Length: 336
Image 1 (cartoon, rainbow, N blue to C red):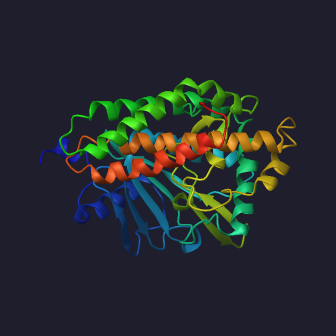
Image 2: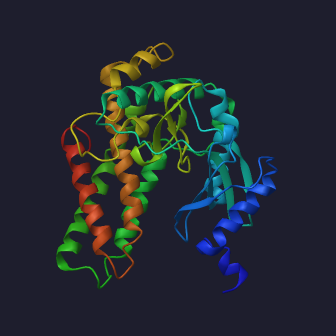
């Protein structure tokens, strides 16, 4: 394999730890070599994650994340120029290293293993407080304006991209008759939602543009207790973050349980001081818009795999997202 080909994917595990250690040394940290490097993830064409033992503050572990430079630059901006100005907990940021023309490394505090759960009331309150403080404070941070757009237009692009991918792959011989009929239903659903998009935009009107995580869900949020801050929330993986209304952050990623992802009364009590025009009814509408946003993003990603000969996985995912989106649309007057 050539050097150019190697740059388009993560190295094998036999080389990954060496590259991670080299990037750490490049950072110029004076805490010495890690006692042990544990490879936590190595998705060859996306990202890789390693844990360095004993080199962080007070001997803590450090997480080394290797990812493509475009999303890496977004995360770098947030860790360096946005989060330090907010009154919220965040992983300690050690630095950023460019590896080559394609990949970079981010070095962050290891915040443990306890994941956020919307099924736990304490976690829902923690999430509401963290989001409320972040959304109101970040709206006043100038750097936020330089982040990518994550407003309604961004999710309308997801809708159009998903529909385009589906239409382009209807001739895939791996799709059976039932699959084709279902995918045409998804296209019809996308058409109806696009026609009623102004109603979605109205639900976001009047809410300030601010920092949004974009993928605020269990796998990207840790609950961690430290002597300095007590128990707090520590969101990671800001690759899809940007500036927009805080709809997607408030909405659950999947409708697998009855309830909200965070405690809305707590959130409202925090943001109302800065956003006095926001009431519970408007907040509920914002959450519903966020639920639509999240399903459209998920449908877009799933539809990109329809060109494969293995279509069962993406079609099954799309069935779930389509059903959830239909339920949201049916429960409102949108796109009727």
